[in-house]
Length: 362
Image (cartoon, rainbow, N blue to C red; front, top):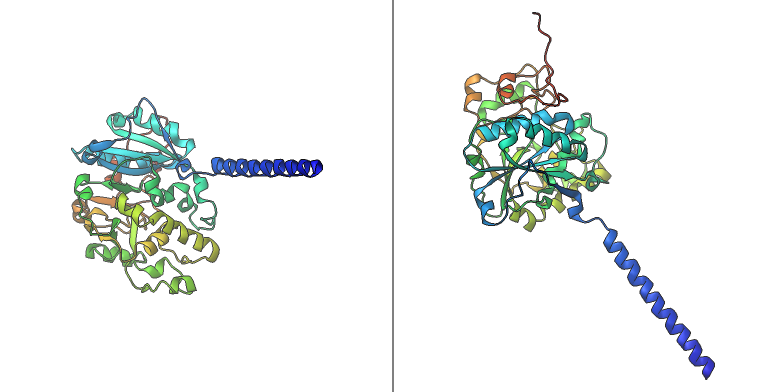
């Protein structure tokens, strides 16, 4: 009997030890698993102000824009155009990678932009692992910051509504007019469709731009056919939009976007003749028939699709926002309507970013 009790005590001790080891292992995995918040790092600094909190957030227009090291001057031109054309209280959330944090802060602090209210957020590109294929004909479209727009609710912000802007836009109107757009019930965002402005149709035809879902999705694939989306339906450009963060969270938009990124990673469902960036197709799928259309003058685009095709000057004067989407950017050469972009450009005090222009014959 004594031997049996001794064996039972040993077995009980082993059982307790196994339970302890199991609990320790579970806790260790939980503590080391990446959190959603780990994809963002909020960076403080003397030149910045704290993110807007509480009731004050309702009186501020939050702008989300990305700043890559190689295109930092473009971001600053966009910010300058927004800031200079409104008397509203604007707060800029500038999302960047680690290598551009210091440059971004210096660019702002040593130029006329030192008076803006802003916060720098660092994006962790590991969030994109297993979701993006390195096979685009334009590698710049695969830059991690191109996908920041998918993760808006994970930003260190406290706003019900935000505006997202690409770095190749110039704002000519008062940004508060765009911010105050009325979103339809159940809609998480407002975009401008690719068929909404007759004045742009001739330009689109002349450069062979795709303006339908067929230009972005491969309709030979079952996954695309099963969506039931007419390939001739008008697409939209996600380079400028207004987002309702609460509705975005409610509909789990980020999860839906990630699902389609992963679907493309496995089955290559994007069109090989893709009319835009790899960030566009998931947005087209997730927001199909579920977005508010905004005034098309708040997103006059295709300025970067040809070095020759131009809009009329009178039409561009009416535009509230200009977008040089496409390969011919206004800080490079050749490109069109350079004067409309250069008036907002602020030279880089570090001289790392410079304009590409033809040499003078003088």
